[in-house]
Image (cartoon, rainbow, N blue to C red; front, top):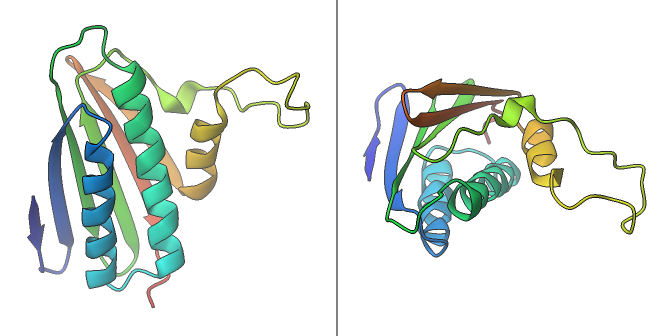
Length: 146
């Protein structure tokens, strides 16, 4: 983990593809957002987004049972928070997913899709890129500093 206090603050985290690692990431994100005066509400929302994406990556991205690394980077300045998540799982573009039909009852709904819908609802921008064998998701949120 690496954090800097320049005009643009930065936090770099690398974890293994194991579900318990998500709690470590959330702890570091909480400390980073607190240190850089991001509101508690925004911090909770950002952690929810990271939790959702990390859960999806760890649960669905790997066709093998090998150990993989997932990189998470947060950068913030006075105007925005940018989160980049890089993994070497199977290609998955969260920007290309259809919005779930939330008008249907729970019994009629297909499983899945609400988490990605939540990510798009919270973040101002969600970008996806496949570079070689890497998925790169970049999320941007305009900030209301406390």
